[in-house]
Length: 242
Image 1 (cartoon, rainbow, N blue to C red):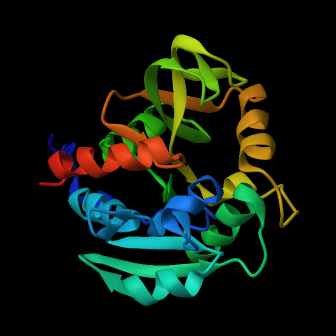
Image 2: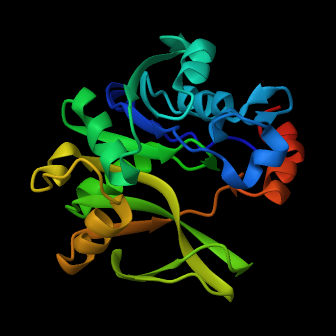
């Protein structure tokens, strides 16, 4: 399964923030006392594959938002890994998803991609950026169609605009937030708090402004947050990263 590859050279100047502070509570009996992005997949940390993907996407700088056992991540990846320059945004205490992203944006000049360090969604990042600019969005999300699921909330979309986030429940089909974003740091200019939820305080409030856009991709997606999908990734990644 090849990477998405329609990439324009100027994308390389745009950094990517990777949220890598997860505790991995539901995987604790499987990965022991490690940050979730350090869960081993075929002998390498999950975060290795995320950075490999960024290399394929021609991203030259990643900002790892770290918290729990940050020293383990920093010791593994240093200040450069593969072809990616790495900086660290360290949370001394948990800041919530919003606080963590806001803090990481202190190391960004303007706009950045943002993605989770414990999920993998194989999309063309540059196409998300182009979509964002074409729609004059405040924030753009990569969305994934799913079938027969109950682990995720869903998104309602009308002509590229996200009009609602719906609670988790079993659905035979629906569209979920794939956890990949593009936006600029000015999204946080009216938020004074240090600790807050990105989902509640930013995404849901952006819906009411009609400036939250979503682009549907059907690339490979996995979230290693539960043991079943962590085990599935071991097999899937042998083909995806051969």
